Image 1 (cartoon, rainbow, N blue to C red):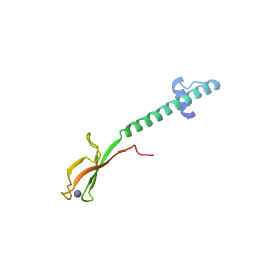
Image 2: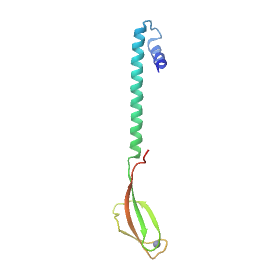
Image 3: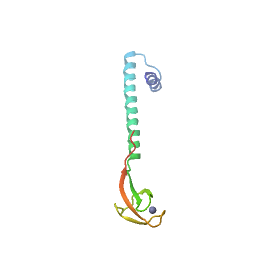
Image 4: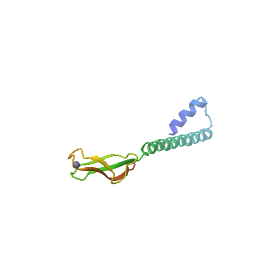
Length: 109
Ligand SMILES: [Zn+2]
């Protein structure tokens, strides 16, 4: 870090720093500035990551009353528990009903 700071100061001031006290001051400022930038970048990246996972998935559990057919589909507007969706595609006699609606939150780390 200090080496990077020195290099940076060398670029800005043309490598002509005679007073070691001034040099230490500049290095301190450079280190503080770099730390601040790094912290800001880390916080920004974390914010973006949280934002990407924020949309919560709403899923409906569809079950057949006659056979063991079970399906999980994306929740659609108008879906409610015990709503009949029509005949089962497997046994063709049972009625498909929504058995439950649940949300899938962001993955836990
Ligand atoms: Zn069925």
